[in-house]
Image: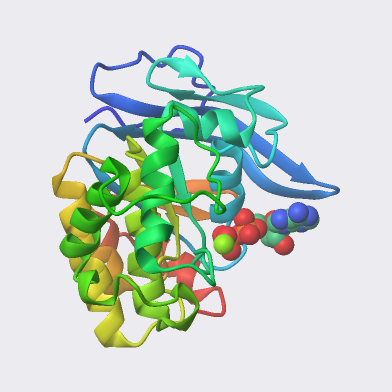
Length: 267
Ligand SMILES: Nc1ncnc2c1ncn2[C@@H]1O[C@H](COP(=O)(O)OP(=O)(O)O)[C@@H](O)[C@H]1O
Ligand SMILES: [Mg+2]
């Protein structure tokens, strides 16, 4: 196990061969508020790494630092051996990191098939900018790939429907399909089941397991413990911007510091 969450400076932390993402000593202030304090975290290839913690713990801020939406004040994020510092969110995506937002982001007014096909095309063209105005013939390889992805998602029957009219759960499935078409190596998911009914939550859990089984590494921020314990290989718990616990689900579940952090919050 290579993950470290000490509060000590991580300058000497050796990079293990299994590490896909290494966060070293990341701190971020918003005015007088310390949102993140010297966070060290390592994500191994192929794992589902859940980040939990009470509201305001700094989970989304950490994710935003990973994808370049926020510049950390200190520390570095290293993906596949290379620092991400200074790269735009677009370039970070090109490196193979995809993010799924709390509210599903799909192209309304376009069919499910086109939503996935233009993402597949963007990847085939070596660009990650998705052009929603492109026309694709039904025999285009990007369309064939999109059909295959929709089939795996159980959405093929609805391929011609307008994405705007999907339920929240199906929108999330479609969004994950768009992500799959981009073939990321690491997927970052911020509360992927927020606002979903239990049925859709369970379908999303199954889908995330399937995607994980294809070898994609995942970081999942989640406050629904049913989701966390169904998916996570390892869990980091953040509280007040600092990792307070790390380990296998059963270890973190029994950790008194984690219980205390949640009991002291509104959860
Ligand atoms: N852009 C921002 N400006 C000022 N404060 C922020 C900003 N983003 C987050 N914060 C604050 O930083 C802390 C961590 O927020 P966040 O990362 O969203 O927590 P979480 O995702 O764990 O609920 C919170 O106190 C939040 O109010
Ligand atoms: Mg958040």
